[in-house]
Image (cartoon, rainbow, N blue to C red; front, top):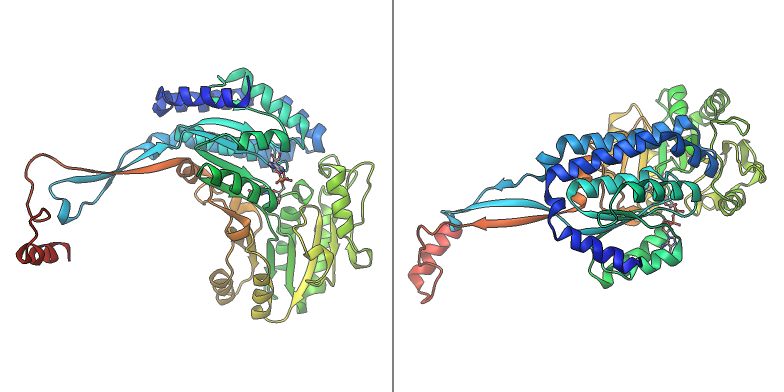
Length: 454
Ligand code: NAD
């Protein structure tokens, strides 16, 4: 079956209105959870073979998040999909107004490689909850996880409803030629622009979950040890291959040395060592080479340029870094942490704002005024005060970027909304029809209309 035939089939199925049925959506979400649970061992094995991601991190950062999204959708979808009342103005009385969430239709989800299960399946879950049919194109970079998703989904779901299509640039380009009702993309800024342009040809709405350089700003009054502990975890989890990892740190000059030694202590205490089975590999040679190029050896505080054969780079902290350094030119997306310093909060803010709007921002401070100032003055997708990465796990928070870091958001109810059109309706009875708005127009009618409309 060619791509066009698959999409035609999905459109036909969508037009049967089966997916509008809430019990159908719940049944399919339960099916997905069942399939994943039953095949967890294979999911762990595939991702370990792809880039040595441990069972611990695969559960905590991929499967548990997927299961929570499914469980929440099953619990709430009836409420989310309910027609919502809206108030009606005097002009339209007697009448009532309401909003009906309706599924966009046949949607395309394009995944990124760094959290291959979660970044592919969470948008698909939101689309299913909203009542869409789904074509999922996972990243081809981790080839085994992509093949596993293809097998598990395509063997357990009807392709007219949910279909995985594997492939890279060629296949994605071919898919983008076809009209979808919504495209949900996770990946890099340059490819995000390609997706946006392709979608524009069909006037297809998009959600773009992109990347960027996410700062962590640290003032001198913090609990240094706990800050370092939280940052080391957030940065080196998945070997730094996390879109919301703190890309770089800006620390107040007076505590730089104390902060660096606390970071070193927590790296030493952690599982993030090249020979530890819980420490993830760099996904491929291309990314390994890209990362090594960013490391200026004379600035290494801890770490090294790693081992190419094993495709592993230890947690590497760079000190005395400047915004003009190579490591500060692009998103790092690996286990390299540049540490920069500042003397005033205005200086830190103005330097962060010279770069594109980040996906995340982390503020470590006990000073409420500083916290408020940063939240007020720096635009970013989402973030945390005195923590890193964990905001991602809150299903009550919309997850997405702003500016160069993305368009739109998802997670929990926000995912449902992302795949829904909110259809607005005014409903009138046949009781009466005042003549005021109808011709022939007259000064008296206008006077009354001005009184009523305001
Ligand atoms: P990528 O842009 O290279 O690839 C993403 C997807 O696009 C893949 O499925 C790939 O097959 C496809 N693709 C690649 N080139 C294409 C082209 N020319 N035409 C059409 N499709 C193409 O990104 P990646 O390397 O998989 O992921 C890394 C980037 O993604 C980082 O910038 C990271 O910050 C970002 N990211 C963002 C989020 C988020 O939630 N905002 C999550 C993870 C990763």
